Image (cartoon, rainbow, N blue to C red; front, side, top):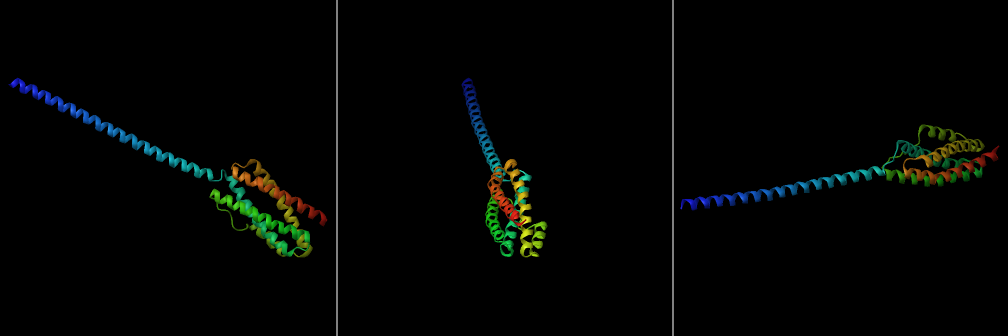
Length: 205
């Protein structure tokens, strides 16, 4: 009888031990599964964050040189419009008046294109003329008649020679493809302006 009792006890203990091992293994598998799920979730979140960061960075201007170019172009474009408006009313020569109106129309369009590009890149462009262009505007306001025409034409020749040079460089060497495309699109317009104002200047001599 004692032997039977002992045998039953041993079997019971063995069953309990097997059950415990099975439960531990099951719980361990669940824990490992949860850990893997959490890890995948974290990796997914990190990946999404990384992608979002990458997308954000891809919208920014690629280099400081491109950013500086956009800011200079914004100020120069505003100056061309303001001087054009002034010349459209003060110029004595019909040719100068016609050219001045072309400056207002073409540079307003270019300025709007540049503003749209800046918005896309998350950039803030200058909204006022710099001290140099303000000084030029003040000088032009003091001129009248033929003197105004000569001063304005000289300023336009100098400005557009400089602009064409800068836009040529940016059209070839800009790091940011969108900025390069803007320079390439605007360059022919600036070259047209330079050719036109040089022709007017030649008639004045």
